[in-house]
Amino acid sequence: MNWRDRTRPQPQRATPSPGRRRGAGPSARKRMVLVAGVLGLVSLGLVARAFDLQVVRKQFYQKQGDARFLREVPIPVSRGTIFDRNGEPLAVSTPVTSIWANPAEVLANDDRIPALAKALGGNAADIQSYLEARASREFVYLRRQMAPEAAQAVLDLDIPGVNGQREFKRFYPSGEVTAHILGFTNIDDHGQEGLELAYDDWLAGKPGAKRVIRDGKGHIVEDLEQVRAPKPGQNLTLSIDRGIQFLAYNELKSTLDKFQAASGSIVVLDVRTGEILAMASMPTFNPNAVAGSKPAQRRNRALTDVVEPGSTMKALTLAAALSSGKYTPTGPIIDTGNGHWYFYGHDIRDDDPNGLLTPTGVLTRSSNVGAAKIAMTLDTPLMYDTYRAFGLGNSTGSGFPGEASGYLKIGRDWRPLEKAIMAYGYGLNVTPLQLANAYATIADGGVMHTPTFIKGDDSAGRQIISPQVAHELVSMLETITGPGSTGARARIANYSVAGKTGTSHQAIAGGYSKSTYNSLFVGVVPASSPRLVTAVVINGTTGKNGYFGGTVSAPAFAAVTSGALRLLDIPPDNIGRWYVGGPLQGNGGLVGSQTPVTPAVNDVPIQEAPVDEAPTEGGAP
Image 1 (spheres, rainbow, N blue to C red):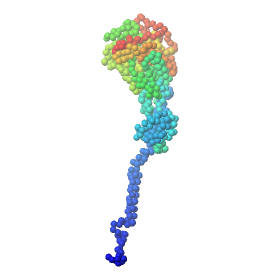
Image 2 (cartoon, helix red, strand yellow):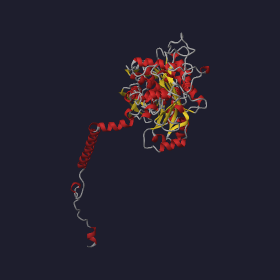
Image 3 (cartoon, one colour):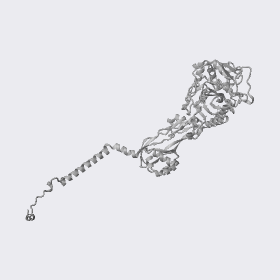
């Protein structure tokens, strides 16, 4: 190509139109349609999602939302009050506040923990460690049952995650005096021992529940509805007389201190109803501070501990004898000889030679030989059935948790020596309440009532022995509180007293202790028209200041019962015949021989040497 061709205008090629350009995208119109379609699909998806959330799965997400703000909280109820028979409160519930926390929320504000610890009276490092170990939880207690004022001081700090919960705490105004009867509750206000446990369902009531909305700090901002109405606990009125209970407690404490005894119990029963008016045991504890007590202190020994009754058993043996028809209060005469009876290789002994005694004299002189000889003339089934009828070997049915049934060997398995020693109180055991109830049966004309702690819960009773036998026994037991008798120290001015002393060696592993004793007295007042029975059992007396039932337990009986007679306004029955020479007795009431019994000098009672009552001193029966 020459230079002319280069300068000559070249023909122009036609440029393709945009719509027809090879490889070009969709037109603007199509793009608009595409965008609109995508937006429509997205909108449709959002609508479908909204429909799914608000209609299809509404309940699930509502529940998830409620779980974060809606709470069902309990409505605490007060435990029922326990009253004594006169309306005096023995156990009451007081409102308190428990402090709880959401660990995660508190730890998120760990700079507030020192202030929290100070308000709680704790250590900041300990609280932080406690919360960190429970960080996965939403609820932990920081302090239970604080006084409302102290708890409010904590809540006033307004620390996120720290909240209060109203509760109730049990308080016992009489403290140690009624501790063994009432028992106590745990930190959740549920009965753990005593009547608090026995009547827990009655006293506890049923907590209610309400649905509330909480804010992010856990504070309740709105009450929505009551889910379940609260049902407060019901009150309980006991048969216990607080005044008599204080008398029993103070006298028991004084007696244990005076005679350096290890433990003891006093039971006061209403003869006509079986109501328990007082029941004191020691050692004791403070139910308002249970944590500092030991299990041995919390045991109600009047119901859970057993003892060999010693000579107090002789009244039941004479009940069987009179019921047999072979004996009357004055005959036949029993020859106790010089106070020794060798029976099956065993020397059954009396403290003094008593010679010839009537059945009444056997009781008055507390003759082991006489009781054993009477027992050996009785049919074993009659004797066994009489003991069982008086409740030996069975729980009294008082309803008290953990009540012991005692021990009475089946009659068909009795060996002759066992039968003889049971007659004066060895080889079997009873609780103090069983012993008191047996004497209350005698006092109420042979009718046995079920002992009860509830006022007005009077059982109809059942006839155990004939009224005649019961009345004869009361008259025979009345001679025991006369001058020179074992129970002289149990007398109460202007009242006739019937009762029986008992002294026994304490049973130990392998036999009987040579240095510790059980001292007992059970009495009925007034003897002419019985109203009260009081049983006093002192365990572990050592003999330093005395250990005989007539020395240790009889004075305690007199002190408690005389006070109870005044408190109950029971009129005296012995003003016209207040004795100097002892209660009136029938012909030959004490002795059937020509050797009369003369009162001891200065009205000092005769003693019951436990070595004479024990089957074998230091050995097994």
